[in-house]
Length: 267
Image (cartoon, rainbow, N blue to C red):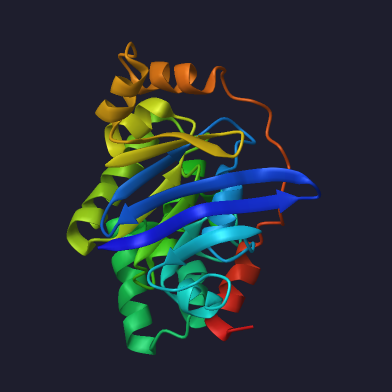
């Protein structure tokens, strides 16, 4: 069953074409890696799929809904972990998750049970009453992912979920996510600059460059397309012709709290 589908998707910014007729589809339950140099169009794509931006052209469906006309329905079925930190540092871990559940209008008993489940699953239960400002970077990231999963979303979007974290913490986070993917069948769409991470984790991958998808498929299929790459990193460099570029600042601000409020209250 296809849960995300984009066909000939276009997005323009003041005469600049950020997305140039990209097409891809994702099956329910997949872990899908969306890779590309900085400024290639990854974040713009995520913003369209999560209803933060409207496309300039093309077709897109997310969990059976059209983001341009059914944004509210889509937001209720998504969990989103943005690249920038978005927790309230003055609240405790429990309060951050509880507030998220309130914004999504989860019934009281379900909300309390789910908050406890997520805190225990991500090994944060012992710190549930501590202010987030005292957490390490890895703990904050685990809490942000727990928050994104709290309301049982059908799809979890993560933009650079492990950026800046040490290898051990990154490995732990993906261990949690793979377990949830297996147990709950959640579809995961993620971007990352850690190509060895994507090679190990993703069921399938799409590589975008200059707003166009230059390759997609399994890691083996993408390496085969280059005819000589032995690793995903080598294939990436062959297909894009360069390393990571400086980030292009396109689109709208990622305000996670505003996104949550709109999702929960239908504003």
